[in-house]
Image 1 (cartoon, each protein chain N blue to C red):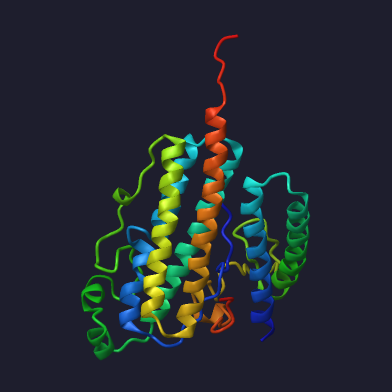
Image 2 (cartoon, rainbow over the protein chains, first blue to last red):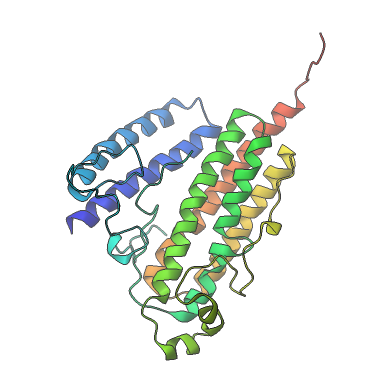
Length: 94
Length: 192
């Protein structure tokens, strides 16, 4: 399913950015990690724009309303619904 | 200020309801060493923290913990959805059900409501960072006990992810402690 695949990839990129950000907070002069962080953010932003254009906004503000006739933010699925998420059974790293 | 993102940090898609698992998973939502406790502990401690590195660490780990609370709430809700009367009784979820139905309420597995009494904000950066390292270890242990009792791969996947995050956060807090301690050990001149 296209939506689930895109969402999973975006989750991976955003998670990588979170983890690199935490690392950089205590290693602020490691240029290799700063580069990796910037590349990750850029890739995530590109994918987020694609996802939002196709499936609606992801951020409570600072996301464009792609549909100017109908406010999509309220729409299902919300993150806690099973329909919002791909199954990760057996896919996580051990 | 925070911006809400309409997605989980790690996906949860549980299709097999399980009353017994729902009853114990609530521990990491509203229990002593659960995710709400972690988030509120770090959010409160930020104000008196020293050094940019340690402030950023508290702020950002607290923010991630908010996302982890959302994952645990999602797990509990999805485990309850579709339970039958017999399943509720067999799984020992009746006491929770008569009070909360299939709603998600922050309490421990034993039913004790969430309380700030389980954590500190001491106003002492060293004390707080030691508490934070201990908190990450306590949460890691709880995840390991939950993993011991879980069988469904759709439940195990997010639990393993969350357990790993506790290990990473412990490491980051250890680094922040070292930076804060070095800062406090410097000579502070009040008059020159």
